[in-house]
Image 1 (cartoon, rainbow, N blue to C red):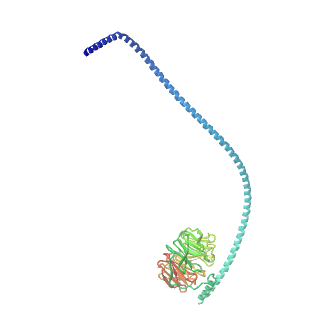
Image 2: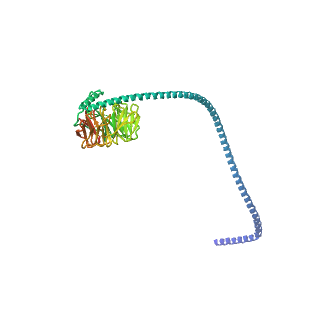
Image 3: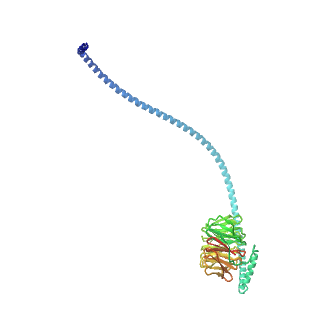
Amino acid sequence: MEERCRLAIREALKALKKRHALEEGAHAPALSALSRAFHSQGEVWKEKSETLELELQQCYKAQARLSEQLVEEVSECRNLKAQNQEKDTLINQLEGELHSTRERAEQLEGQLEKTSSALDLTTSENCELRKQVADLSAQLSSAKTENTMLIDRWMLLKMQESERLNEANAMYEDMMDRFKASRIEESARKLVDGVVRQSESGLENYVESSIPSTVRHTIHAHEGGCLSLLFEHNNDRIISGGQDMLVKIWDSNYGTLIGTLNGSLGSVLDIAVSGDNKFVIGASSDKKLYLWDLQSSRIRHTLTGHADKVCATDISKLSNRQAVSAAYDRTLKVWDLNKGYVVNTICCHSICNAVSFTADGQHIYSGHTDGNLRCWDTRTGRSVNEVAAHSSSITSISLSRNGNVILTSGRDNLHNLFDVRSLEVCATFRAQGHKVASNWSRSCISADENYVTAGSADGTVYIWSRSSAAPVSTMKGHLAPVISCAWSNLGKPLASVDKNGYLHIWS
């Protein structure tokens, strides 16, 4: 049954295929004609379509160009609008500045008027001041003339006074010549010295100097070495200066430190004390001098003016107002201690190691590296006298208590005693083995002027008799070269310092 059905279906399909083939053959001419018409019309439409597409593309391009131009014009319009706004703002600012400038100009015009009136007033005052200056100049000229006349009169009086002094000196020299001709010269000198000492203030405690023999106190006074030493006038207090830039005050009875003076910026090479024991002046290696007040231990003046280290100084015995200093710049300077400035500068041919005022304060003695002892007038700054004192550098100058003799020490290991009036050698002191230690080795004369003391490079302290010029004592105790010696004006004690900074007080 199923096979019959399948065969029937196959037959039906074959019949349908044949019918379809017949129908296609019948309709083929018509379909061919129609397809040819549609094909030709499609080509026309295709050409039109391509033409329209080209036109459309050109339209799009034109539209794009127009859009770009529009955007540019809009942007340019905005920029122009912004520029117009900025210009309007600038115009407003300029108008405001113009207004303020006009107001400022009006103010300046008012100030100019005031300034002009003030200038006129100042001009009139200037004319009046010029008249006053002219009057004062005339008064100054007359004052100078009067001053010149007074100076001439003063010089005449000083010349007359000098003549009288010369006459007195001549009389004195004549008297001394008569004294030297007899054997009573020594007793006459002692008598004169005693009268002079009794006339000095503060000498009621004066005693004859005795030769010390033992060390009472040994003090390490300064670090690095002690370079200067002295006693206060008519007092037993010792003042020392050292390389530690300090000045110290000691009690010689107990060997204790009383005070310290600070402020120096260099080694203290020399010191001097005023006659009233109120001030101490120190010569420093920092090219300055320092004046200390002993009561307050403060610096009163710092004296500047030297171009090199200051190695020596002294204060006038007659006046506490005047001081002298010597430096390696080959100058001596005279100072006013009340005002703290230089009153005179003396130029030397050789470096000066030591200075000393005369008893009357009118002259200065200086010892130089060329071995010469020079005398200067403090007022004129001129050399009064000069003598070849040593064959090598002078290291020390010490004026006697009455001011009649001056002791010098030199690197030739000699100590010479000079008469201050004639600068003739009165005595020369030397000893076997004695050697001066440095360019600033200081010697001294005892209070009664009977002894001369000096230290040696081997640490020995030598004492000579003035009358015999022979050593009377040699004291050992220092372990380094002795730099300076000082004898109290009260007759005792004797003090010495060495290069290691040790202070010995002898009794």
